[in-house]
Structures are given as structure tokens and as C-alpha cells.
Length: 321
Image (cartoon, rainbow, N blue to C red; front, side):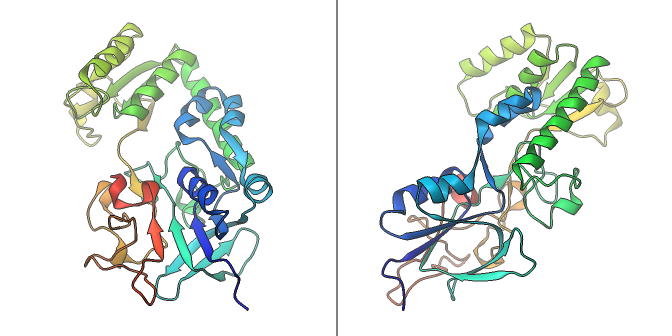
């Protein structure tokens, strides 16, 4: 016998996913699927790398919040395929060898994005590596960041590495002077003042989308702290003269790439993903109602009356970029 309430499957338990669940839980049977066991406040994670105990203020375990306080269902697992016509999702639960198929009446994709634009899987320090296939090809395969403890160990490892760089007054290059780049280099300067810091950007000023006065304020601060700035300059590690033009002999001891975003919609068919966009495309296409659509502009999954059944919200869709 079918349930009396419609079933909503939400893919992703971060900002957008939890917000949608909160608003729908009184009217639908809501299930949230997330590949990691915890929520992390992404905008604050840079501080955790220079002050590890700050991670506790940025995270909480999803299960007790989703099931205990919100009254929704939580599945700790990774969605590997979404079928629009059948309205089913294939999920690999965290502690199961076999995949499971879950059916739903509506689905809201809130899978977010990654920040490592040059990496195959978008790997970066700013978001945990949570896709099972990405871990063996990543820079820290010995750590499982799907667990909160794995995330904590990664942050402690990076913190220790920065400490060692600071002790030898290492040369650090931050590529990208947007929100992340400026915050990261100033965090490094504040907590590790022995580092020799340089930041570059292809734009004529830092904090590109912000008003000129905001950029000037941040630039003055960085100058005051001895951070070298270079603008109208593209990153080109293959050019022998690139580093010397920054006043760096040889190569820097450490580089941090803080530019761009990369889609992580690996479970979606290509017919609903953009061919262009940041990081080479792969963003979910949607209409004005946030319903997922095909490249031809047709609603991808609809009921007998033509109403959409699958939506994409937050940083996973084409509108976010």
C-alpha cells in the first residue's frame, strides 16, 4: 500500500539540502542522502587549518539532527545514479557492499560543488573528499573524510605541515585573490608570521566582484602585513620566468590554488548537464522553477500531467555560476 504522504528524496545534507528538508518535513516524507556523516560550515573552514580546534565550531553529525530533531530519514551513502523516467536513485550505503535502489515521488538535488578547478575530481582543502572513486586518485588517500574523524586528521596533518613551513620561513604562493585567496593568505600571515607570502590574480584588483573600496581596504591590509600582491597576472607554472617575475627564486615551497569551482554531479546523465561553464561544465541545467531540464530545454522528469518531479538547488545547478 503506498504511503499517504508523498516521498521527497534530497541529495545532499548541507546548506540547501537541510533548508529544503526543514521546509518540507511537515508536508512530505523526507529522506536526505549524504556521502559524509557530518555537516561542515564551508565558509569558516579556512580558520580550522590554522587553528584546528575551530573545526568543532563548524561541524555537527548529521544523523541526530536529521532524524532526532527534524524528524526526517537520513541515509549515509553516495548516490551513484539518478533515473528521471523511473524516479529512482541508486545509492551505495556507507557500510554495505551492494548498492540499493530507492524510489521517490519528488527529488531535490542539493549536491553542491567542489573548488579544485585543476583536479580531476575537484579536490581541494576547502571541502572534504567524499566520492568513493575520488579517494584513490586524491592527494590524501590514507584519510577517509567521509568520517568526521578523517576530516579532523586531515586538518591536523595540514596544520603540522604549515608549522614546519613557518619554522623555515618558507615561500608561499596563493593563486587567486578572490574571497578564499585573500582570507587564506591573511589567515596564514596572522597565525604563521614567518611565512613569506605572495598572492596573484588575473584581475586588476583583489576581491573582483566587490566594490573598489573593499578591494582597496583589503589591499592596504595585505601591504601592511608584508604580503606581496601581483595583479593582471595569469598563473603559468610551466613558464620558467613566471616565478622570477614574482621575485621568487626557483619555485615556492608551497602553492595554494584558490580560483574557480568545479561541478561534482557525477551521478547525473550528460543530457541534463551543461557543456560549458566553470571547471569545464557539468552543471545541472534547470528552468525558472529550478526543475531539471535537458539540453534541448525539456523537463527531464515529469509526471503524467507534465509537472516536474526533480529539482536542482544551490551550488550544483547552472544558475549558481
